[in-house]
Length: 472
Image 1 (cartoon, helix red, strand yellow):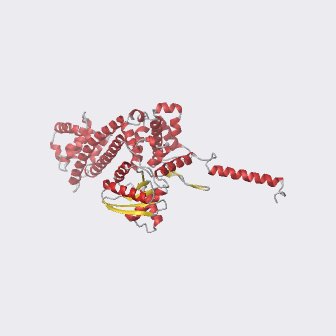
Image 2 (cartoon, rainbow, N blue to C red; image 1 turned 45 degrees about the vertical axis):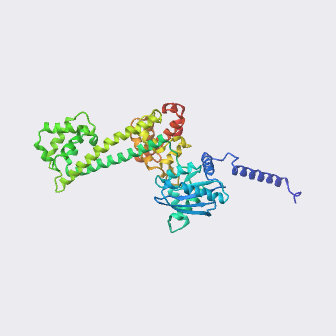
Image 3 (cartoon, one colour; image 1 turned 90 degrees about the horizontal axis):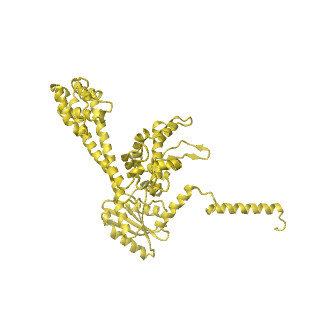
């Protein structure tokens, strides 16, 4: 049969064999078709496999306040041992020792600890595992939720079942390596969290005071300068009136203008002011007798407005202290000069972002930081269909918020951001709204910071070489 093959058949067989060889080379990774994303994914899986070796066991622990459920499983999810321990997270050292002993009895030399990051308890477990030389991996809560749906369509949740799911997901590498913070980075993150809480408290107090004054004393809002609640003089006027009138501003008309001015000058320091704006004081004094907003509930509303102003003053003082501590920690890390080399990015804004990202050198590429913030667009493509890309919204919400806030200050002073904003909002094809464009600028800011920190070069130096714009 082979002797009857024509020359055409021989050439066809050779071409088929060559094609099969090329396909095999591509499958084995010897060709040139692997993308950068493929290589990064392979490297990440190799790193995880070092922590979760095939020849070892996985100790899945479902952390709780007082009762801990743990199972020791192989890579086929077969349960080899199970424990239910009544102990705090910091008392789990003996459990880890028992798991290592049980693994040795079954002929396994390594144990990987896996858990769902519940509150701060996983950090204590990580320290206990590190003391014993045991690697630890974490399972995303969203992955756990999806695993419950796949395991049981009733989405039943029990600690005993969750511990098995944790071990199974870790064995299949549906896990991640937790971030390791040094002491300085841990302090920076704590200070950043504190600042974010105070900004929220300050904003809430300001909004409550504005809402109450709109209904009870609208004239004083009209008397406010352009900066409004940022004016120390106006806030001092509010404090003097609302703390002395028992909800009836017209009572203070018995004071002379000089007496009112002296009282405001004495309260100016409570709001960080140094110089008195006499035009603002005169406008508020004139608004004392304005009849607008008088209704039966006015007195109670203005008393609450006075409390809100007090809360605003206290939050503003604590916020200033928190921001000073935040920038001081950024100086200790030696990153102030690098991060603030971006025009328009303040030390507070840079510190707030870095407090949420941690050490940027742990990210292999800039897009990983953007994904970590939830600012990466989600592709919606299938065959010939291409849908509208929207932000993922996953990741760290506080990082997304810090980058969003930093854009507002940087956009006023950074020409590159201004040009990019103008292009995104005015382009003929699919122009973005103001909010969409600012979200894109927040992602650009994160890419810039990653390039600057990882390369240890300031903004101006990287700009001249083009590396910064490539990262953006």
